[in-house]
Image (cartoon, rainbow over all chains, first blue to last red; front, side, top):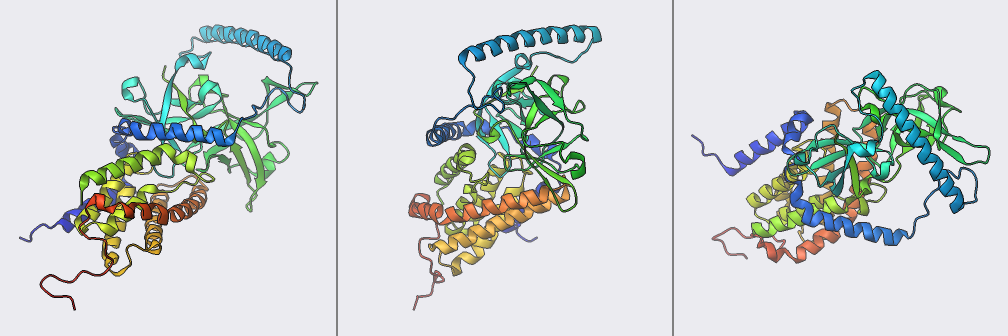
Length: 293
Length: 178
């Protein structure tokens, strides 16, 4: 009987890994992931924090855009900001009550209302070690994280992605900008008031076929499934893309902002190529909110 | 090879890769630091140690990425098999060698990634977007290859590699070198 040599064993292991990579579905192989993420924290987390601090220093102070300013160049005064905040708080409280009443009447099982109360915050300890757009969280299945849970940007600034792996050592978030991420959305446009400022509580729907939003792997999303004739002159840079996917996402997240249209071009086949920018650089998030309840 | 030094290097590189990636990326293309470590180990360690080390590096990287499990382990093992064959006929200290081997490694990884994506019916446009990202990442990795591997080469004594520092072909045992 021929002696089993190192090279025979090595070739066998390599072939098994090749078959696993090429043929095994992700839901089977992902079981092995998320078990050892916590071990990297002593290196990845401080490295990330240092890089974040250095990035902030080099970038300098960032001018925060005032979404209510609209076309006007004049910044709002502090009195105007206070009045707008008071008006918004009252309006949101009233709408929350109305939603509560409607939910009771509909005897809906779906949770509605303030999404922040249903979320837990988790720190980001690292990102994908390859070339994919994903984050590694300091949280695990022991903290209640499960595959498929929606993930939001901090302070409710929009969707970030979904939990793709949840093990005892850590959890991974597949971001909206990942090449394998798709979601159905809808175009909407904030109304402009007479004084040129923007009314963010009143969005104008744009009548187009439902766009399939895909990540492009480079920090953006792209819509390539609509004909240019369907969106020409209807969709312009600055328009919002919001979530409209009741089959795949909870009701409470419907109409949550996915991003803003950055450019609209026509490709050689007559289809539109619409690039959508997320609310922030998702790969540089320091923490996220996960819809755990 | 001193395995403790190897594991410390792998742990630090993996931690830095996952922690720093969004901040060292250029237009969302990031370098593959672990592949450079694979090249370093494979050109210096004995055949068995090099192959085992390459496989372990790939398997560990697979645990912290969204790409299919086994992709990096397979790619780095193939790279290891190639490097152990050619390392005795190339100048192991030369930066051009490092860049060339890193290029081959990235091409193997890219080809396997593309093949795997094709086999699983990707959404339309995925291949094109993936290709542009890949080439940007490849260029970035090749730019860093002579620097990272050059620095690691200076510390190779810590790893007690069996192959030694000379790039010349060692004489067979029992025969005097003329």
